[in-house]
Image 1 (tube, rainbow, N blue to C red):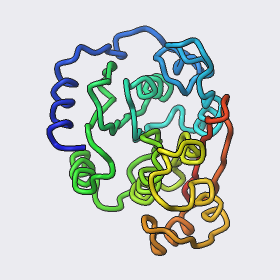
Image 2 (image 1 turned 60 degrees about the horizontal axis):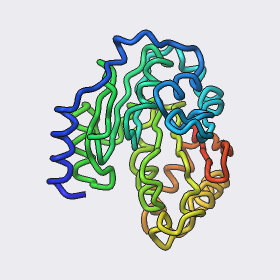
Image 3 (image 1 turned 30 degrees about the vertical axis):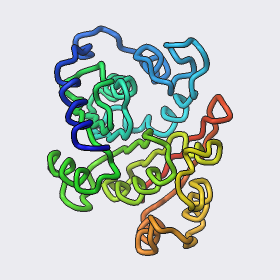
Image 4 (image 1 turned 90 degrees about the horizontal axis):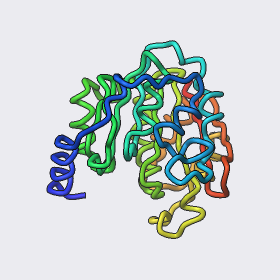
Amino acid sequence: MNFFSLFKRSILYKIKKKINIDLDNFNRDTLDELFHYYGSDKANIFKQTQNQGHGFSEFYAQHLKHLKQREIKILEIGSYSGASAASFIKYFKNSSVYCFDVNISNFIYSSKNIYVYGLDVNDQNKLEKTLKKINLESNSNFFDIIIDDGSHYLSDILFSLKTLFRYVKKRGIYIIEDFKYPNYYDYNRNIDHVLVDQVLRNLKEKKLFNSNIINNEDQVYLHNNINEIKIYKGNSKYSDICFIDKI
């Protein structure tokens, strides 16, 4: 993504009228109701089409309910309109959500606790500058939850895991949605590399694997800092999600 495209999208984001969720009165106890209302495809029913969504709500609730009343920070990679960010703000009353997306002009929601940054997370320099903006130092443990719902390209999933897992707090959670898209779609398998499901198996078994993205040193770090990996199937053949618990 070139500078001018990102700059144009940033301008469009700034001038676009948004829905301030801090002023609406929609509050529900379940994530699925929130995902549906704000239009996230994480819901069982996707509001825009009234067709099945991914159905990730129950897995999020199961793994994150212990954080519901805590003051937490969430990083979302790939936020699109901000529907899930809005839902998380309403579900986790004491949360802040940081959104990284290459096209923030799609964002339609706002909140005093939602922070939006237009960037390609694969741009190492831009990523480091953005992390500094939110007062992160190299390898600092900052986020309670990181969610990768980005491009679903194989290279992007691997790079994000390698780079950003280090920013998850102890006993925090790193989540990858739709991690098997490279298995199902040729265009998501954009590099010659073992697929994400095999990477996850190797991490669970603490086995090293050949990779030109996650080197041996990074793999050892992951082996030493991953407590558990849980994998679930959502509503469709293409709905796969994993939760990686940090030690």
